[in-house]
Length: 355
Picture 1 (cartoon, helix red, strand yellow):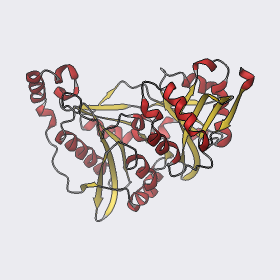
Picture 2: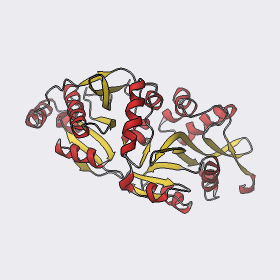
Picture 3: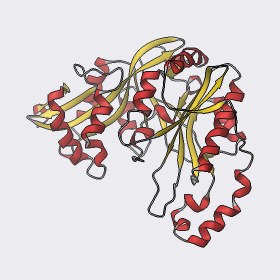
Picture 4: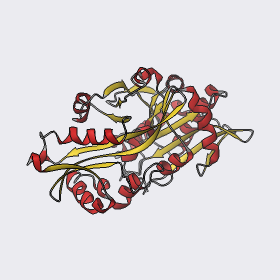
């Protein structure tokens, strides 16, 4: 059977077969095989092309034995832009495992683009496999959480009306001091000002993934069945920073258990003030929506420091950044050189819809 398996880059004509494979592989999560979500995920990213989809298939006859799927991104390395791909899915049918198929899929992707990024956990099988292929676990990705309404955050409390109200009331002192900041405003779209911000902001970090207006629009405006909130810090008509928030859908008890700062970015001008006001505005919006807590992931010393100043606590997270690169390894394999947020990983992509 092993000799019968061939590795091919996916063609658009494979789409229906791929969706059937994903429906079986992810029977507990139909979002993976939803046609609209798949099209958004792999056909519509700004750097994708229908003529060269970033998906590789292992086929045995007409049967799909496995796939590796990615999205093309622009990697910024010391001020220079390099094409890269971000791994989003690597899976092999149980009938075809232990045949080296996953390794061959990774090798095919590497021929397409030698700079490859991914975020995963040790609980998955991928890290060990990828390390054998030369990938490096660059660093753990810290997660920060601030509890706001314990009566909304914990289901066992939420379903008990009087206890729910009492828990929220007891936590009221921790939700104070969130005054309005006139320079932070709600935005409705990612326009050219975001390109201008990123052009300047990206120079602060040796390693980062581009946040062009087109990429932000794709991820946070066009994603099916999701709504994100955009906050911008604007001074004298210039965008100096932004935050993107995601609120979970209400559970059956009417509680929004958690919200997330999916992305936060700032320029070098008054950076501490900008970050502080974006965090404060994010907390204020989360309190207004009565979210149980606010969470975010961050690889950036300034963001981490200011989150702690606002009462966010580091919490357990298995997320880790993995990279394989043919050059610039002194930078790319050093976690202290990276700027990365929750929006860079597939965490924000695979969160359940909220619309």
